[in-house]
Length: 130
Image 1: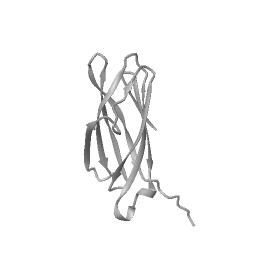
Image 2: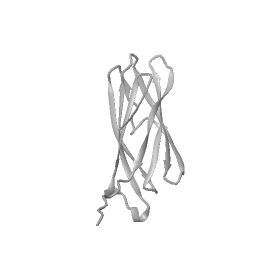
Image 3: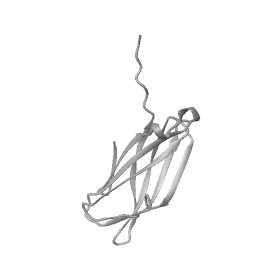
Image 4: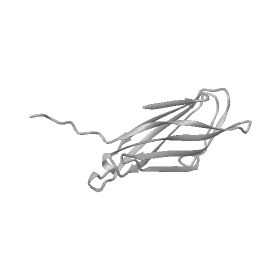
């Protein structure tokens, strides 16, 4: 679990490797991640857009930008929580991912909150010594 807090808005990400959707023989590795956004502040805010930065195990960098998350632009009043799940493929068995969400307050102020950088690692099989 990875957590970052910006302006009293806490973002927690929990990644999980998906072996049933991955094919290591074809260099296809897939992760799901659960995101929890909690407004611990005193202002109502709306998530407007996302900006992901993804780096695979060979250092190849990719950016993903777009409106909202999973087709939604949630409004978070003080104390509200919004959760969603998504996923990402990589061509290597490890990588890292992080970024920002652009938020807007009821007063129209736009600001970015941090999505914590998290590790994407394929689990290693247990080895037995003979």
